[in-house]
Length: 301
Image 1: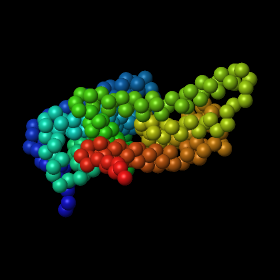
Image 2: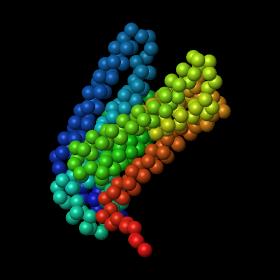
Image 3: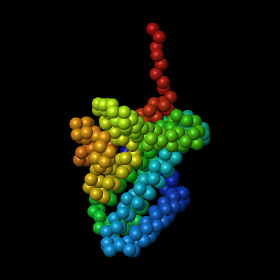
Image 4: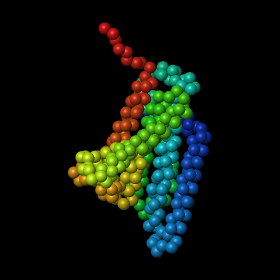
């Protein structure tokens, strides 16, 4: 079976190190702490309530899942942000480029290594996650849904880190740039909709007619990681769409607009997942192009 040489080497080396053991220990320790804190909050909230405490234990699922996704979103870019720039700092980058691997294979190997490591931590946390399914009575299929979302978050975060690592010469600069990319995706994708909402509120106050098709600025939320995760957990916990609820509450989305069709059913999650994968693949291509030692030159005739 073919396996990327970089993945084979990095996984083999790290599996023999105690760092991976201490990493899993710290990861499980954080999850256990969050689990017991959540249990205390649930117990305190149900002390004066007549409801069965077991019905409230289903909230352990989003609490533990969000905790893990936050950890992955913070740690994975740090791992990949130091992959290429770290090779440059150790002066081994030129040696790595002399191998028979293509630039894209090198980039893909670095990303796959980070994804394998992150999923190893997620899988190791399954005993803790399984408690909310056994006690709370949730379907086991939600556990596999979470694994899919965790895989998507790992790939997306790793692609951001590897792109920044290919652009920077120092690892610390690549890590800082990775978090700047996060700000762009979290804040930049939300800015068009809120700017439109502010402008519309001002025009409505002045008695002016609204802009046509301005509601479609909410489509930028398709690339917003926070909206994606909120949509996922609202779907799991209530079976409803957060985007549809938000649209109905704000009253900014009309039925004739494109956003109303995207927000219906499971289309939002499907389209958003495809877009995140497309952006991740584009970042990998840009990173591979960046480290490619063979540059195309314009031939003068």
